[in-house]
Length: 119
Length: 214
Image 1 (tube, rainbow over the protein chains, first blue to last red):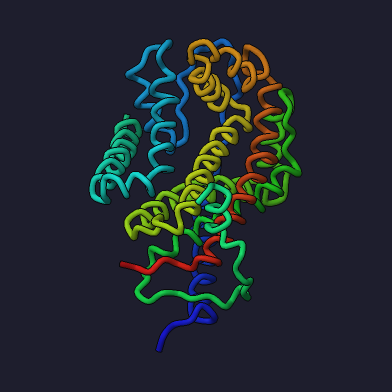
Image 2 (image 1 turned 90 degrees about the horizontal axis):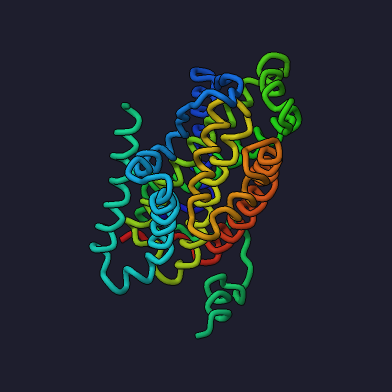
């Protein structure tokens, strides 16, 4: 019998919503948030961003202070432009080539995050 | 077809309204189709826990750090609410990434769903900006210097960089003005934009249906 949205899929959606909440609760209990140190305006401090910006942090190592906008701004904007134009780009160059470009960006994200995280 | 007709067509504004339970689900979908819904659930938990945090948080240079300590030590369940806010934000970003990959692999961004894909990408960008602005709010050592480094990127743009830096920071240094500014964007502007974008996202899903698996 064909599954219908109501009630078959709706109950699965609700199940996953509750499961998501449980995962969030467990994480919040096991790894509670910490309070950082108070700001010290004088001491030079090398901050680390959240994990989803670590890849960008790694990329920025290859740029000097004057050219940092190339890696920190133009590269992310380029990736966003690529993602937005995927529906039209795919018509022109085909799915596999688009997927290849996407994979390069995704691997950059994953590998750079791991390199930065283990340092 | 001009651009207005294209948007009207992609939004399916000229078709009849249906009940929310009355929708077609194609055969052969798998559990990777859940991640959009998981992302929305995580967003709702971010929203609700954020509403409770904003009751106790004070976005000022002198009191921000103290109010975080107060949330941890005095506010009933305050530490838990802050943990929920932090972890639902992380789950939100992970599930958006998996959701985007699923949509790309099943080729669901193809016409007539291109506009929905674009709305999704913009939502993702705004969520990342939420992460950036939210990072400053605890007003501790890590937050302060991360924002100094992050906003310096905008400042390095030739010619217009300095003006952009002044707009973002509200001065040459990261100060209480920056904090108020980031707070405003984090709790008012960005969530409002996200809610509007999600409305458009869900409206188009309802009108266009879920794409057929290949």
